[in-house]
Image (cartoon, rainbow, N blue to C red; front, side):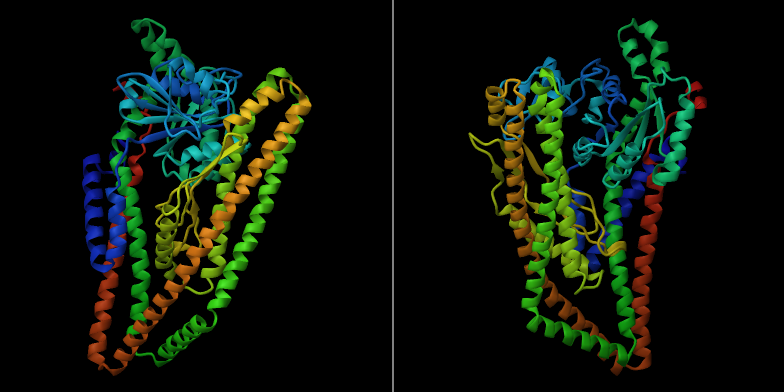
Length: 624
């Protein structure tokens, strides 16, 4: 039985309901708030690409083996006891097979052969002299599954409790859904659970694969334990589907004659997961509609709060009118007399946040540098040879962490400055203005890239974007500021940092197995990397301060205009007779009830949309 059917509705009915819900809600929103409706309409028109399933999980859980089993090609994603994926491997469909490596600092991807994937995409691979490791490798293949969905195999080096978890989290940004891989040897570990909770802030839909069921006969007990852990620590996924699979049996079946392989294919249960992913891909447009509908719902909640305030203003309450006039006078006075104080406060908060972020940055680099210096002392020649690649991955992980750090610092600045002046619901409109200003700032500047012939590191930056609580964000997770539907979020586009080609050449020429030279090289790389990131942080904070200053001035004017409207409404109500006031209040109440009814209808559709997640077939269904 399909997931929508289990929810009491067919897929066709859900699609019709979702489309109608979006159309009707947008039509009503256009009548009330054309600007908000335009934003939502833009989100709806955004091109729907093929759904992307990002495969994540702890190291050595069998992510790459499962990816190969799903695609049906052994060793396409490199698998080895001592080799782990170091780049994102993105599998897409093409009639002609091919590979392209996306290397930082190069505009065009580098064409590769299928047999080059291990060298370019794993820790122990052999890269061309002076070439930086790629961040992403696109693999085009004719596998049937890839006609419906793109698969992304993420790095697992170092485990989810290491810096490399942050690199995996970076891959989550591109996910339509996550395929979280655990194995049957033991229940969820604490790092796995923490990673899941963090990743689920950015991706709504998660499926679970329990691998190595052929090696652990007690896998059903482990599955039950995992479900219990989810219900206790991540209840949102307490009813999420688990797919027990054996990648090894599926791979064995690929090497056997078709007749003999049938039983192994059935026993592997990989086909169940393949079918679920295809079903999920077929519902990609529904998932997009659900996201649009969720965003529209937030706008209606905001409008409902305003309607509630309008109803209060419709009562001829002299005391309320006096309070509004007093507030207007206070805001107007502050506009005239405290503009410099606001500017000073904003500058103070920005400088404070910059100092705090710089301190964290220094601590991060000191810790990583000490780790590498210790590693050099204990390394043999083979480990020393791999050192530049280890350093490059760690620098990338640090840049991902720093992007999150900047996001947090910017949110704190906005909270300390803006929340002192505006109510939570007013922040919605304010954030739109800030978003527009920041987009203008970032688009007016060329792409910053710090590199050169003698540079040890290369860094690229894509500007920054601040978005509202609807969650239409780039480069970061939605972070609530004021709470509820009127929350606010700040996000930064990611900062990319890694070794330049010169660093690899210098290492090869100077080090050659010499531990002291290796230590000196690490210190030089870390010093230049920290200086580059520090410089980028300065630019980010400057842009933020400028945008907040302009937005604050504009928002104060809008606040005054809003207060004038509220005061005028009360003054009008004061001179109206009782009958006229009652009619006005009745109209406002009717408008608010209409908003509440619209929110309720949206909620009914979104509840039914929860059934979009496909589940494994039951034993009864398999026998039919």
